[in-house]
Amino acid sequence: MEKVFTKTELKKLEDRFEYEFGLSFRTDEVPDRLVMMEKTPYGKIQNELLGGSYSLILCIPRLPVEKSLKRADVLDENDSFKLLRLSAENHTSHIEEFLKEIEYRFTFFWIQHFRNIKFKMPKTSGEQLILSNLSGNRLYDLSLENEECTTMIWN
Image 1 (cartoon, rainbow, N blue to C red):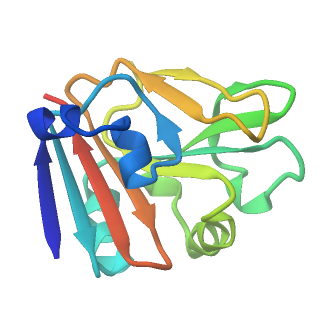
Image 2: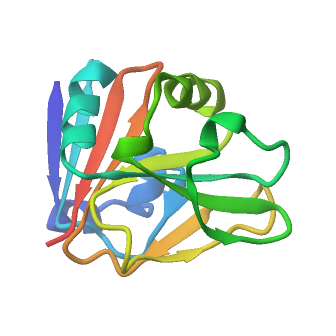
């Protein structure tokens, strides 16, 4: 099942759109379109992401070090967290298992163009990663266990 929300509809929500859809990050940039997909197997979405030059972005604690992420690029880090980028070429089944383990504890999403995005790192586990400069981008936020995908599109 798929539900599509326009920018106008998202602006009418009482809360920020991130809270309404349970996203693991924040942004003040309301997307031009948001698509909620339920009962969508991750394998179906994964093929599009891996074939479409998307990057997996993860915001995880600095410790412990996850061996399956050794090929990830470090985009930023602070005393508590590391922001990592993993290209589609470096994606493995071990990464999939790791994502399933951390799904409800840490931030991860797939993004089409990561280079111009500005990231504000959380300092504590009570804060969220904040994204800005998302124009011309597409982001996939996944719930693997529930087979849900929220896609945000900025023109």
